[in-house]
Image (cartoon, rainbow, N blue to C red; front, top):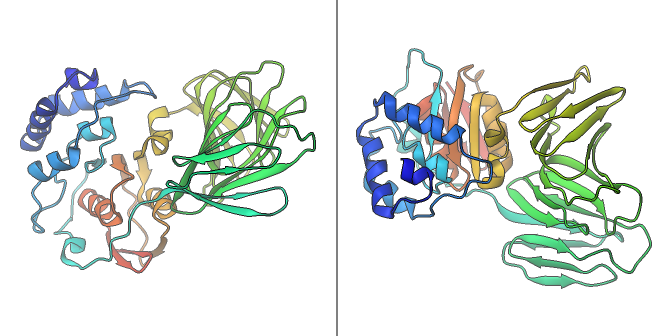
Length: 373
């Protein structure tokens, strides 16, 4: 495990490690080590890349009669690497009423995970569809290149007119954007960002809906500001995440590195790395709390990571990424979940994991997830 987390293990050693995890589900010392190793990873950790799907097939029994991940931290090392085919979940201890997984006994039209896709809306209203495979240069006075699932703006163009573009991702989509000043933005699903084609004023101002992760190019004489409705996030040079979905109860601004200032009305909060500003939609109260940075930016690295989250909160994330609707036939369990799931799994794999670790069952009809007792 130490060699693994220091990026020095071989594929054979990784297979041995995962096999040991699968064979010793009650090894408390191992579980503690995995949790500690994950918590201590830096946000930009680079870990070994291996074909974990092959490992997964050799370790986990595919029998429908068994839970896919019957242990508290099933193959937890996989979440450290952001594995494609492995995941782990846990919930707070309590009596379990779980039976065999009904999903394993159904024929499901598997729903694939989201991908790089977005729509660029130009100043004149023209729309351009973007995806992972497209390669194009969008002309005019602003040089824009689409390549490898990202959109890159050249340095400030020759047109002095103030023009705005909007990049929007649908449910089931994400995209990366490099702004004219070199600032990098990762846009999560069901999100949009509006920005000028050149930053010519005293401030660099963009408008965000949904969720975005920013790595801001440092320009001390031209502050960078993110506007989210009436809230303003001001930075000089930093990395941070803003989550501002309309179906969530709060707007969360989480600082990874540097410093940001969050303003709502007369309230002003200065964040330090590892802190989160929380704006409550109901009373507009702006508070600061410690943040689980790894969890919050996990989406950018291809993961769902949960930390004492309810099933309803988890399903909202799932709905946005898989472009599905959630229908409740019962009140969902109030159990709190932790752990993580790869965002590259098909929907049925995610639901199987949630069933194996909780109390509710699920049924898939078209693009609807029906929550059952």
